[in-house]
Image (tube, rainbow over all chains, first blue to last red; front, side, top):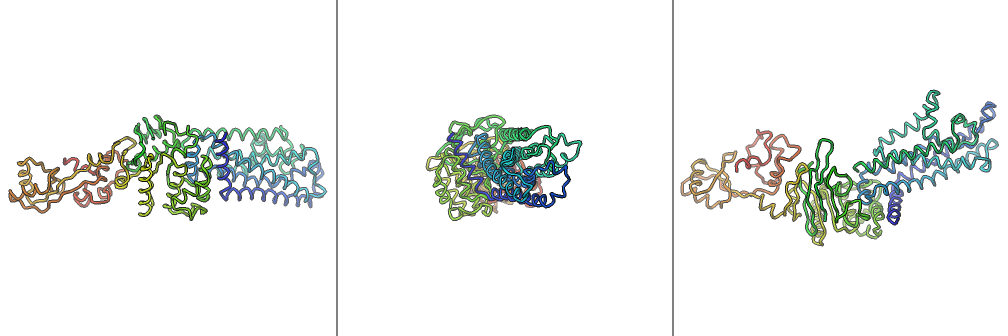
Length: 262
Length: 335
């Protein structure tokens, strides 16, 4: 236990002492809140011209998370960098010479990074919700309404899980270029395309990001532009599917770290 | 104390390290010598548990590396110069390593001071010169005040002052009773620092001996004689029981005899001499000879294959018209 505590302290020193940590997390928060605010402002001004059917399923909570689709990319960047920088810089040799218990090393690195992401993710989620509702004005909702608090906390959990998933993948791929080249197009383009085409839609529903976003919806029939109304699972079911992806990526990452030469 | 037993590493078909068995003892500097690509770095990475051996094992003070809870307090290593995140300050780099092994923070300042990097403690190693990077690596190796230190090519990229510093440091560490294990591909470097030698070639153990024995066994002294009448001189020497061997360039080489004696014989027989010079084969040459068959990447011209320094390359004909002539084979055949 004392050993784990020491390694945790060490990993905390590592994560706080590089600039990329501050930048990626700051960008994740600013982009999410900024873009969501913009979308909320536009939605509020155009609300009267929306069709009645759209108004009926309008999800004020979910709209205030709209910027997260872009903001999560910075979260992914954080997850990639915190792991793969060890490999690209050669630091991994120093790290594993100091902590040859690779399971402990991985656990502590991920624990520290996840704790940080959870704090930033929750702060971002609550901020973007309150800013968004302010801008939506009369069309907005409040944190006291049913399921809204669950969705807002879910926003923070979503950001945390996406970063965790990324860290597992980065332990498998090691190279930052490879990890970015795989994850960025996947979450930014491919997942969206698969989810938009009717033939692949019902499979795309099980991708980590698409399943996970369900936790941020309140009106189960709605979801606006993201169209999450026709899912075979609920908000928690979606988060659970995402958590399964996370577990799979972390197990794969652990096996690679354990088996392969550093 | 580091003990290797049957240590082997294969990458597919290729065997990088082949059944290495030796131990590194405390109190002396042990040189780990081998040509480039001989498997030195792979061996050192396996010692640190970074690479896992195909078979065999390494014990550090009797334990497997990953059984050490605080490895930096047992063994400190300088591997490749840049095992450092370029964006993390020198101080923080050492701090995170220290924290993981329960080493107090003040030790970080102490080692930075020791290696002469105190003034750049708050700087990012991204901007460090090769020499500063080596010093930071050495600082990391010394963090836990370990009983065993291991340096992979420590003088690479250092200026003469830095080289001098590293040599003194290694000797001082050994004098304090520590185990010091240093790799190099340069015999000349080892000959001034190491007391004990482990030589490998193509992953195999070629020698495990004290430096003094290595010198005694491998340094050859001979006398080179040039004369317009080599046959006559050879016969004359032969008559007195001295064996002269014709070298490729027409000179004669005589082993184990003082130059004066050869001069006397020549004078008695009235043979004209153009050169009579005692020669010392360098240690570099002995090392090259030992590993000649195992060098992985041969140079394809004789000229490139020659080592620096006053060595027998001079006795080869100029122009390098014996393209794949291996180092030292000339006078090995001559013997």
